Image (tube, rainbow, N blue to C red; front, top):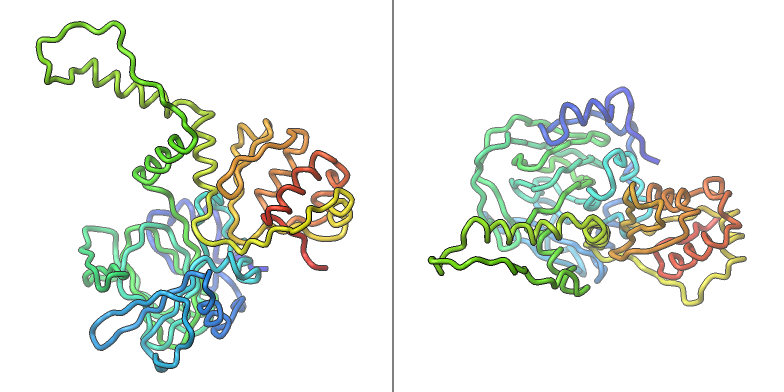
Length: 382
């Protein structure tokens, strides 16, 4: 289990002084850090068809990027390249433990856990991210340069690599295993490996208004909602047929605002949209449904585990009505077990003690059986 060293990291102080404000290196944020996976395991994951991986290297002065899966890395030599795996938390239970110390930021903001293996002189080049990232140095040594937020010029160093023009650094420092570099959105940065290293990046992002509106439009179309036309039974004659006057403009806005002010509809959209997985999940649905007696016994002896990368959310003002959102879908359950359902959304691992009050509750067993059958939750092997 990974935990912040409380002598160097405080949630409230960090959110007050640094979150979305300025970058910082948290020296030995993880004391005596041990990487959850090694370089060979990272290479093995990059050979898998379902896992999103990229190889970044330089061919002379030209940047190159390739997408996996890969069969071998022999052509690359021993310096100047990086291998990146996205959504590592979806595929490695051990690595997913790295996310736990960061739960002080709500899960709906979490993007994924990324791992990068880099040889000396390796990196992905100077760039700007549109999300918050915590880069935890796992093994080896890297030097990081971070510039200030401002008017920076970006350019395509490769079709798959957006880089930024040279910048003046406000941070220029080596990081070692256990160090954590936090970079808010919009700050240019460039990491160059000095000794072969693994780094783990926890990314937190939001959706742009464009992305949200596009998702909302898809949601309305898919569910055949909000088909009502604008009505104007009290229209007056106009002398300017080419004009959209202020009253008509207000009518159009009111029609759209009526949709946005429909809390029930917007919660369903937001819940399904935000919980929809952005990366492949390691789903293994059960071939045969669990019986209630099987679930009852397992709840008393085994930990209940949420699938790595699965997003499960609730709204604080509707959880009491028996509604949650899992994997892009809305699910209903008996409100009588809402406290236990909240625990399933708030925690990745639930011990038998945490669920002892619902182990014999048929309504809870019914809901959990549906989640187990879908492969969203599973029981640990004791």
